Image (cartoon, rainbow, N blue to C red; front, top):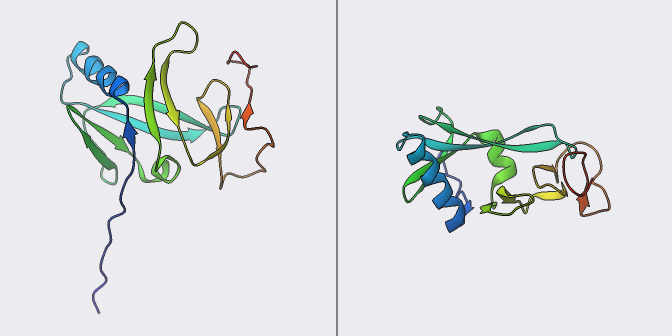
Length: 138
């Protein structure tokens, strides 16, 4: 009996503002063929934090999401936390930068870089937003 592999549909939304910022970064750094790595790692005041980096190519098991003018690379572990996210870029005097709206987060820090997922260890706070020492809400 042959086992059929089903490819999971990856749902990551990138706003026009974020897409334009990534394309401008790639152009200004003179690496137009690079992609944007988006990842989740342990840390931050809520248990998990987002990270981003420009990389030349995807790793073997990465999810590669093609967007007009660039690609996004997400490793399988990070994808468990990122599916359904919206990546935005906010240009503001206080707190500007890339922001990720994550429907998988049950709590997040006021600065938006740290979150607690539904399946993270430990109980989620009753508050929808937690504070840390690095954000304005701390």
